[in-house]
Image (cartoon, rainbow, N blue to C red; front, side):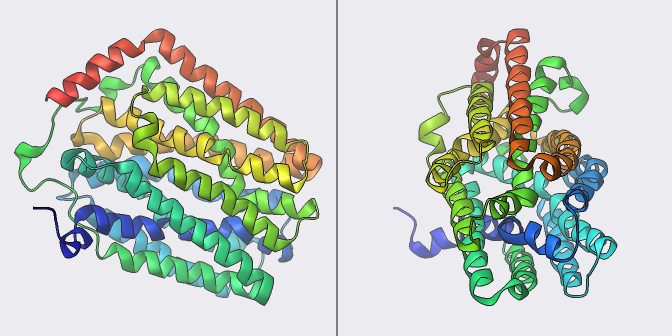
Amino acid sequence: MPPTWRERAQSPETRTSAYYFTLFMTAGVANAYAGIWMADRGLSADQIGTVFTAPLLLLLLLNQIVGRVADRASDWRQTILIGAAISGLAGLGLFWSDGFWPLLLVWGLANVGIGAVMPVTDAATMRMSRRRKSEYSTIRAWGTAGYLLAIVVTGFAIAHFGAVAFVPLFVAAGFWRAGMAQFLPRFRAADPSEVKSAGARRLMSVIRPWFILPIIGWSLVFATHLLLNGFQSLLFAKQGISTDVIGLLIATGAFSEAVLFFVFRRFAQRFPARYLLVFSAAITVVRWAAMSLSPDVPLLFGLQLLHGFTFAVGFMGSVRFVADWTSEDIAAEAQGFSQTMQGAIGVIATYSFGWLAELYGAHAYLASALLAAAGGLCVILSLMLRGVRTEAAHKLSLEEA
C-alpha cells in the first residue's frame, strides 16, 4: 500500500527537504545584494573581499573539528541545530553594524555558524538517503529552490523598497532556517545492523594522492563559484545592468542548478564521480572565459544557464566521491575535510578576486577560468593514478555490503 500524503509529509526526506529549502536563503539574499550594500556603506572592493574571506578562514579551523565531534554524537542532528541557531541570532547584529570592522565581525559569525555545520548536513543527508534508498540530490535540490526564491524576492524588494530591505530579509531568512531545523529527523539508523560498514573508518587511511587530487580539483572549481556571492552583483551593476535584471540573472543560474539537482539521478548516476568533476571543470572554463568579455544581457542569461553544469554536477560528484570511499564512522569528518580544502583555496581566490576586480573589472573572470582549468587537470591526474575500474569495483562492494 503506497504511503498516504500525511506519511509522506512526515517522512525524513520531506522534513529534511523542508530544512534544505531554507538552508541557502541567506546566501541568496547576500548574492543578490550584499556586495552593493557593503559598497554603499563605504567598503572598497578589497574590504568586501576581506569580509567574505574571513568566515572561510575560520571554517578552515572548524569544519573538520565540528565534523569529528558530530560523528561521535548520538546523531548529527544536534550539531545542525546549534549551528542554525548561532547563525540566525548573529544576523541580528547587521541592524547595528556600520563600517568595516563591525561588518567583518557580524558577517563572519553569521556565516561561520551555518558554514561549520554544512558538511555535517550534507554527510548526514547523504547517509540517510543511501540507507533508505532515496535520492540525496532531490533533497539538495530544494536548497537551491529556496536560494532561488530568496534571490528573486530580494531583487524585487530592493527595486521597490531600496537598500533598507536588505538586512530584514537576511535576518528573516536566518530565523526561518533556525526554526525549520527543529523539525529535522534523526539521521542515524536506530538499528546499527542497517548501517553499511564498507569504506574507510579512519580518514588517514584514504589520504593518498588519488583521493586528495579530486578534492583539490573540485575546490579550485568551487572557489570560482564562491566569488558569485560577493562580486557578481557588483560587477553586473558596473556594467550598467539594473537591480531587477541582476536579480533575474542570478535567479537564472539558481534555476539551472535546481533543475540539475532534480534530474541528477537520471542524468549522472551512470558516470563515475570523477568524470562528473572533469565535466564540471570544462564547462566552468568556458563560462568564466565568456563572462570576462562583459557580454550583453541576452548572452549573460545563456551563460547563467550553465550554472547547473558548472556547480551542481561538480558538487554532486565531489560529495559522491567522498561518500563512496569512506564509512559512516567518519562521514561528517570526511566531508569536513573536503570543505576545509574548499575553504583554504576559496580564501585565496576570494581575496585575490577582490583585488583583481578592482583593477580589471569583469576581465578578472579570466583568472577564474584558469583556476577551473587547473582543477580539471588535478582530477585527470587522479584518474591516471587510480582508474575508474577500481572505483567501480569498490562501489559494487558497497552495494553488496
